[in-house]
Length: 438
Image (cartoon, rainbow, N blue to C red; front, side, top):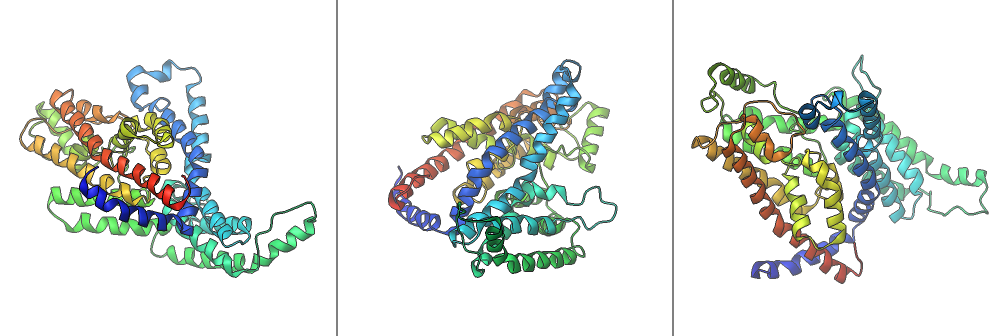
């Protein structure tokens, strides 16, 4: 262990112990533990649906699976249904359990607080636009709405401390009427919260068509519109995007969505097809040429590198188990298991590598393109293409691009390794000082 780590470790352990003693930390820890099995199931279903059972999925395209696998469409429908009741509802689950555990910590009726939190969260995501296809803004009920779900879960759980709805374990002595009467003690708070959320949602309809989450995209768009230097704009935009994902907000840049319709991407592709030349395309530095092919393996933050680093140097059986469950989804850029299970989300230790790793990889790719060591990635590839192969296929089989992609992955793993070790050391030391184990 380095001298710097030895000097910092006592401070980190002390701060970690204090953090673990807070209601917020305990509520989040318990919530992530409860929803993680749903996230894993949903992520594996999403992995199969997007890469195997979608006609533009990576494996489906290569092996023409829609003509090989029987009941192909029906199986895809089943997988989508599993996604919809697991990862696409993780924010709703989070709102429920965060409020439940916070209210319980105050010895208040945790069930009533949890149900109120879900009701409030759904009201905040009611669709205000006319002719909407759904009553709710469905995109906000998954990972995209986690941050808002956590904030409102914490707030509602805290508000229930002011009610007379005390936490009491039901027993055989309780009648149905008695249980109902006990629940009514917190009704005034529930009604006040729900009415307030209706008013808030009505007001939000005038400034954002996507609820609270839409307000964060205004912050994202500001630097993109006011910074003219391409490389600096890409660095800033991808950093803000990563920060949003770390906080539990699905940023606008999602590795599972192919960015092929932009003006720059179209101009590059047209030039390559017309001149059979990738090195002199008009827009060599874009999101599609240096970010996606080299800086988003496994998802935002190069989480595939975190999974590999955990399997390589991780000593915790729990961390290694989570990495094993996250590996195959991570290979096709589905990152929800590692974001929730490790967890990366709202983890201060993981914030640094989560932000800097993509920037370093983008700098490597930028240098290689500027020195004409490799051409930019021009051709569109499936969103579920395993990370290191994106640049190779996007440059029509350029070996240097493949080597640079592998180099980026190796460097990313080495960046994550010390943070994995530091996180495990802090966990062990904090458990000793705090008197408990994770």
